[in-house]
Each structure stands twice: as C-alpha cells, then as structure tokens.
Length: 318
Image (cartoon, rainbow, N blue to C red; front, top):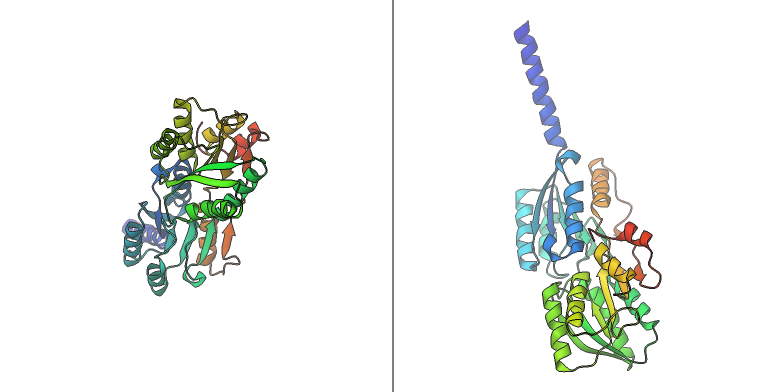
C-alpha cells in the first residue's frame, strides 16, 4: 500500500510539473542595450520584471544597437521556436523578411517602444511611443518662446531609429518653413553623452552663433550642457542658450525644475505589462481589440513643472 501511495504521489508530482511546463510561455525579446540611456535602462528593467519566471514566462533577451545583429538574433529566436517575439528595432527598415518568417512559423510578433516600417499584418500589435508627436510638442513649445532668431545645435540619436526620425522631422520641417529658424549644426551622437559634448565643443570653437540646443535624449543634452559650462556659456531659464532634452529621467527633470534646462519631452518606457496582458488574452483564445497602443506622454516646461511631476514621471534615480 505504501508503495502504491508513493507511485501515485510521484505521478501526481510529474503531472503537476508537466502542467507547469505547459503553462510556461517563452518570449524572445529584441531590444537596445540598457547602457544606451536612462530611458532604456528603465525599459529593460520593466521587461525583466514583467516577463519573469514568477509570472509564468521564460524570457530570452538580446540587446544591440545594430540592426543587422538584431535581425540575426530574431531569426535565431524563430528557429528556437519561441512562443512570442517582442521587438524594439534599432532601425525602422529591413524587418520584413524576419517578420514574415515569424508569421510563417506561427509566432506572434509584438512591437514595443518603436514602430517598424512594415505591413501591419506582420505584427500582432504594437505598444509604442509616438516619437513624431514628441518632436512636434518640443517644436511647438520652442515656437511659443517667440525668439527673433532660432540658431539651433541639433544633436541626433541613432540614425534610422524611430526615435531619431520622429524627433528630427518636426524640427527640420519648421526650419525649412521659417527663415528665422536655422540649424547651424546637425550631427548624430548616437545617444552618447560624451559625443554630444564633443559636438557642442566643436560648435563653440568654430565661433558659430547659437541659442538653442535640441538634443534627442537627456544624456546628450547633459553632454552638451557640460561643454557650455566649461566655456562659461549660460543656459536654461534667463540663460543664453535654451536646452531641450527627451525621456524625462528624474535627474533631467531636476535640471528642468532648477531652471538649468528649459524643456524635457516625455517618453514612457513602460510597455511590458500591456504586452503581457495581450499575450494572456491570446493564450485564452481571445482576439485583441487594439492593433496599436500609443503611450500617453507630455512635455515639461521649466516655468510650470512641479515636484509632483518629477515624483510621478521621473525615471530612475536623481
């Protein structure tokens, strides 16, 4: 009798383990590395927290700023037979073949953070920021300052990324349409703070007049400001140079409320839970009602930002 009970218990444990294994969902995550920025660090942490073993997931993550490396690993995830493929693409183009392969393999694809230039039929859903709207918000704020002339150092992010394109185009369109707007320097720092400082130092040393720095993320804005400080050039509220950044790191919003920066555009890194909820619906045999989910975002002005804003919207540590 004892042997029979032991066998039944053993079979029960094996069945429980099999059910647990069957319920486990494997996701392949293609993302940019957390070292890219404070925004990306928060984004990566969010996905690690949501797509955890405790929540019933096995997460395989790959990080690169290079589109070809991302494409190669996405293809490997498809070969590995992941249940879902989650992608934040380094560039907006070049993904059709990989997404088609995923579709043929029966692997639903979710885009996050950034859009990809492809047929909507190739992905299940997208949970993203409206990067162009972020750029429009910053440009409209800048227009409202009513400067007689806008001489702008434009420091771009990684070329070809959705964030770079979305934050660049509204500024370029405004400069093309208004003779009072002049982009005196336009160069990519690929999200890198030190390179942004180098670009700004070169502009200062050239003697080119400028009164606006439009940096496409907070880290590059900080690098640019470091160059201004070393040359004794004032910036921020009542300063000689207007400073614009993006992402809303907590330390960056602190610079805004202190008046050292003028404006910071929000980019929310929190998409993981929305995607997990969608995956659970698919697992339950339901259909998704929404194809594209746009994060609700805003911009912060040094003259109106509050401590509550920093506590609510700031990313990371000060």
